[in-house]
Length: 253
Image (cartoon, rainbow, N blue to C red; front, top):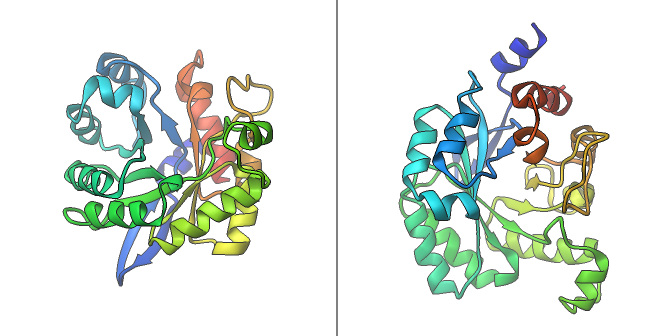
């Protein structure tokens, strides 16, 4: 009964952008970390409710845009997670192409700079005003040691993420991808309506895999995340539907 309540009550966040009211649902985003459309279909066939799913590079590069149409036909929202990062003209043209696809959320790397992000936004809006765009700040697999020794960024992770988030907002983007651990800081600096899409979500007592900066769904909510992305705790579960409902209830309650 309680699960039915959460299915029926679709919690949404309403944002006003350029005078138009847009709605993006607040369901946990399921990372479809599969390598074929057949595996995706097998997984999605287990669910009888609208979902918010993420298509990443692994899946998109092997299946192409046709998978998006197939998933949309099931009634699901889509985060196309390709993390574009190139010269401004290339990213702008690429986003113009992606804007023709029926997706709800896309992203770029903030490290590409403000001109690249601005051109990405311009390209995206040519064909679809409703798609949200966020910028990746630092991957949740990045540690402080990696930041300093490999990226040669000598600030803290929090300061590096905040800097990229400011650049994203200046460029007109809707928000960022960050760790839940930075959500409170970004909310305080950039406001609660600035999207904070947070991977690195693990229910208590589950494997961390290759994630370093993580929280539980409940902690992510308390810290100010607007959206959470969860993959293997659902897709690798012996009972994906039950695992999803447990995470959804803890996130939305």
